[in-house]
Amino acid sequence: MTETEQAVALPGDPDYAAATAVFNLAAPVRPAAAVTVRTVAEVRASLEHARRAGRWVRVHTTGHASSSARPMDDALLIRTEPAGPVEIDPAARTARVPAGTRWGAVVEAAAAHGLAAPHGTSPTVGVVGFLLRGGISFYGRRAGLAVNSVRAVELVTPDGEFRRVSAGADPELFWALRGGGGGLGVVTAIELELFPAARVVTGAAFWPAAHGPELLARWLDWSRDAPEEVTTAFRVMNLPAVPEIPAVLTGGPVVCLAGVVLSPTEDGVATAEGRAADLLGRFRAVAEPVLDTWCTTTPPAVVRTHMDPTDPVPVLGDHLLLSDLGKDGAETFLRVLGEGSGSPLVNAELRQLGGALAVPGPDGGALSHLEAAHAFTAGGLAVDRASAAAVRAHCAEVRSALAPWDTGRTAPTLVERLEQPQRHLSAAAVERLDRVRRRVDPAGRMRHDVPPGASNRY
Image: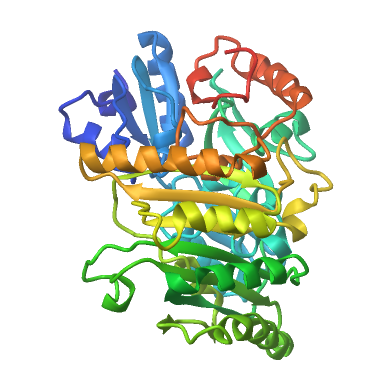
């Protein structure tokens, strides 16, 4: 028995609890066995263990997406943790990131060289899953989908072979990995392109929800012709009264404008500040915010702009990609989510798309752009059966109300439920993906890591 095989843990073992820990406490995972790996050798040994034991293979790092994962019965869950630090090449503007690394480490390493990455909204989200599932960042309207920044992927495919793939080395597998839905191997490292970022104007401002109709109308009007250097989100929030949240935000529903204005160089800071002032001035003309954190600062601050919790929480939610809401859509959105709606959702959000997010990557993978005006995402705390039922019911009401603006497509990183409709690939892309999967996983060992709609094979 090898060292890695001895590390494979079963339910009840402390190592099993560590390997199966997830961020979303409302969606625990219960595989037949679990193992934490850091090296290529450990990945290979784990895959061989699964083959001999007749188990399916599943992969995760932080478990932020556990609510959208298929059940893990009869599976070996492989948890990746970093084998070393993030490596920055300032001249090439690239980062090599070991699998299991969280975004916070990449952000800090890149900022030391005046660079930034298209990261997620939390420092605790895993880099690999975010990137390969598409990734919508607060730099997205300038930088595009985060997956387009990937330059190479190192992985062990289900057949046990280690590969480093890129545009020049197995381009078909490289294409499939970038947004194809997974089930292609266990990634051990990823190389991504960075971009210059001297300063940012970023933050979040809050108003009582009574101002929601006028503020949403102004945001929608501004967003249609907004500069690509600006990416924002309009949020309706019902925040719990906990010590971490300012009391002024917990007395009732509030609306929030959060976002980032990028200045790639020091010379561009005044322009960035002017763009932020233009947007915020439109909102402040309606009413002064009750809390406002917008300021000029350095790029590491962006990873906390969205104020995502850093500790695990039980959350249920939903996601849609929407066309331009217009006046009717805005009224509908606030009717089911704004003041007086009785919404139990902690957060209901419209993320601004367009700009580079709508432009296909010139050498893009299976997913390289989004054709929608807004990404809707919402979630509520599921602390018991009653609250879970209330969140599910309200999400269903909201989905029904927003149906006229639903594009029928989804962004994989935002999908909140396995059972929700999912579609981010064309029929031709799915057929092409299945051909790649037949080559690298002929036995279908990783079939259950593939989300609905990403394969005709399973």
